[in-house]
Image 1 (cartoon, rainbow, N blue to C red):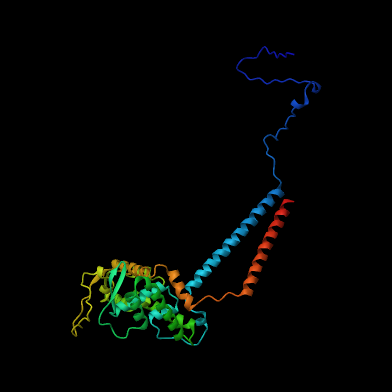
Image 2: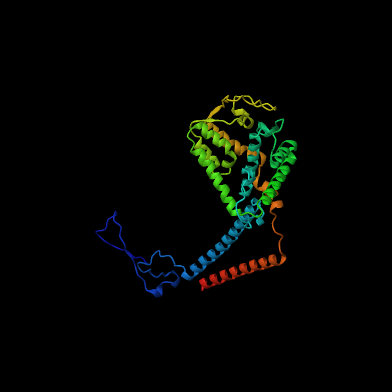
Length: 364
């Protein structure tokens, strides 16, 4: 069968639409297609809202369980770290009465649970200022005794010098940990019967006052003198590094007389000999060397940081060695451990059951 469409006015450059119709009985059913109503072309099928809600709840439940587990692990790690750094025994927190006065800055540092690398650095400064030792090598840190030794060194200073000078490098870490254990026990004994809270507040006020005096000094000479006298107290401030930079960023600094024993590479004056220096004649002034403020501050801050890291490379591990003796963890209880384990299993089971119910409910 041939069908011909004829239009005398048709041309070759115009598009024409035409069609043909046939009786349904003459056309096979498998080739027949129904016309799509206008407006329904290219409309994707919409998923079931209940199915989508169920899937979303499933992901939320699974993600919530993962976040819960991660949170528990993070809290456990953080709690374990804090416990290792808490070297004071808990019984020291039992409130007594009154303030325990007379502690040195280093003993106050232990009372305030200052990081032990900073405490050791404070002991080094104290020993240098008293003329008991001097630095002979800055990197690696090496010190030597000055003879004759000054009188009335404190026990922790003598123990520190023995650990740093007499012990080999392998045994030095253990020896320094013993120094700290002895100090913690000594402070604990001195605090017996006194209020920990009131005593801490008392020494925090001393730290604050030490910095105020330095910051309010009228001249560079007075500022340098006050900083020297209260150095150990100012080192207890958490903002010691930045505060030192701010205070001494301008103007000259009159370096203390012991500076050459601490940083021999930063001064042009010869390092003190190992014999007792001759006292100056009465009325004769001593001319101290000066450094630019910014240089002094940078040297002081980096020196403290480097000294601390030279003595204690890993503060957490070092402190944990002290804490094991001064504040050991309580022994685990079997009944408590079993109850906790059962409770955790129950919680997980309930969470999973709740998740399953939520997902099933969303899918209906």
